[in-house]
Length: 392
Ligand SMILES: *Cc1c(COP(=O)(O)O)cnc(C)c1O
Image (tube, rainbow, N blue to C red):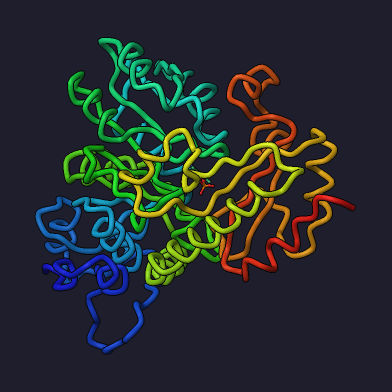
């Protein structure tokens, strides 16, 4: 049944898409807390298993609450298929298992989420898939890194924690001219600020744990794309391997999507104010934020994203000791490596999210000991600023 909300604008779809009201007449989407589904008769059961009849079978791969979340997110990203998963990492794993085989080569940005790098370099590499890592912002390096076996290009933009950007349009072109797929982890922007599929990417990855939830409650993820890559190849892995999202988590994420655009725009406004304020503090050496005109890719940020997002990083004078002192002096901000919450969080990347990298890897990626990352939330900006104390 086509969903009438799909022809509407983004904010309407974020609230309405994917929900088919049941006979109970519910206003809010129901949580289908059931592991399996009942058939009218043996013939129907056979037809559902053979996929000749659409319908629910078993919640590892067909659950109506999860499906509502999948349809809503697919609609927001402009994809025709979505597979929801137990976590963001499960989304990346399921995507790789669906699209790759032994002998394939993956070219990835060197500025990807730490666990993604470990999944690629330490786990999937054991199964005959090869990985190389290149500078996110160097399109020539991507072009030169491609081999005959390259099946997939993988990046995040903006990247964590230094907010470098990847040029999605240019890299989609590179991928297409070599018969490879471009996969974009759209965690930092969400479809409210950036839509990679519209720019030519084949697949979008989400850690729903972050901004899609938006209030720090549940862990989840998603793969979005077209019917062939996601609806068939990635879905078949979900069905057989089972890294599934729970209906309760899907429901929480649905509620998150309803306010996504509002939050992302308000968070971007708060983060822009904080970034400007930080540039005026004498203890701050450098601020990393795509909304600042001196960001090296400010022009790209303006065309590729509708707003700069919520992640602001900065280097302080005094090295690691000074960075830790500032973090420890906060009373309002949460000291946690998580991000994408309406509660602002503060972290020291070199000793947390990037602590499993070698000193050399951190140096070459620019993750210095004096770097602090803030995921800006929705508290009053004056209170956030007051909480960041440069002198004791
Ligand atoms: C958190 C995160 C992930 C992993 O998501 P989980 O839900 O924690 O498994 C992947 N990519 C990015 C950019 C992230 O921030």
